[in-house]
Length: 196
View 1 (cartoon, one colour):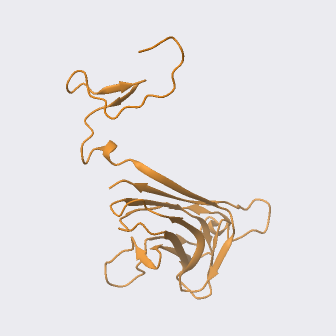
View 2 (cartoon, one colour):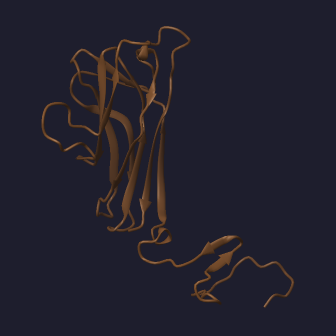
View 3 (cartoon, helix red, strand yellow):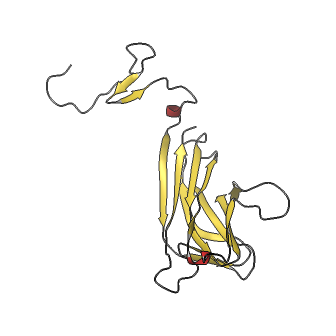
């Protein structure tokens, strides 16, 4: 019933279709056939974001924290966490910057193929052509994790200039910053809880 005055709240338990299989449209948004496995049955429950501008460096052939990290507390053990890291980084000429991703202390998303080389999530080479050490790269690291917990969980990435113990890599700045043309940047991490 409408009395001519503005209304702002409608409280009901169930809205059923008037015509079967036609769905329900609310101001242009059509809701139809929400079943297990459909897109609308797995909504985003929460988003955590960290915008990170601190300049971090690491020298050596081991992995160390970038500082790019975020905490999330899942609302259900059946939820998935979509992890999206966007580090902006640089490396010394003739170095190879490798990345690993972690849930708390557990490494996730890295290659499990045995053999020579570095087992990691991904990496990027900085050679001595075209002055690559004077620029920065933003490399997306995206992984859908199933932590099966409702406890606070920390996600982070580590990096390493793996080719030599004397090489250095940087987060949020070019390796070479000897004039005004060199680049300083920013990084970002987004965690999204997806209903299971």
